[in-house]
Length: 107
Image (cartoon, rainbow, N blue to C red; front, top):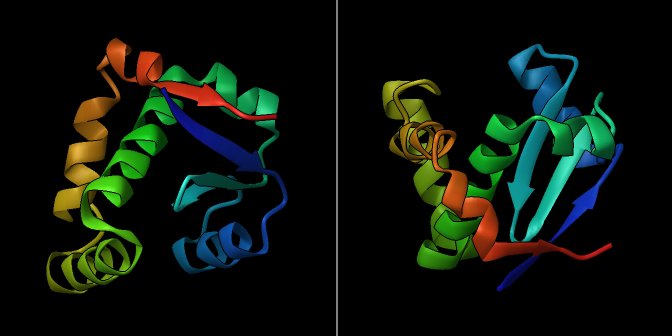
């Protein structure tokens, strides 16, 4: 099992939310899902959103922290957020009910 944590009212998620012009945001740094504008309970109840962020954790594991950040930023600059390959992969994972079985939340 892969362990992940959740941080509410994250400074980093707030910055990302300002950049993306959204009030509620989740973002992954390593094995931690950073939230802003949404509670842990609200986030966990949204299975598609949870699965999306769990896929990003798997991408971090596959690529490593630095390579993930560089790849994500490079793809986003080149083709935009929506067509970024890592985002496309995470959106596909929203339908994968098995992804949650690979993770456990550390409180």
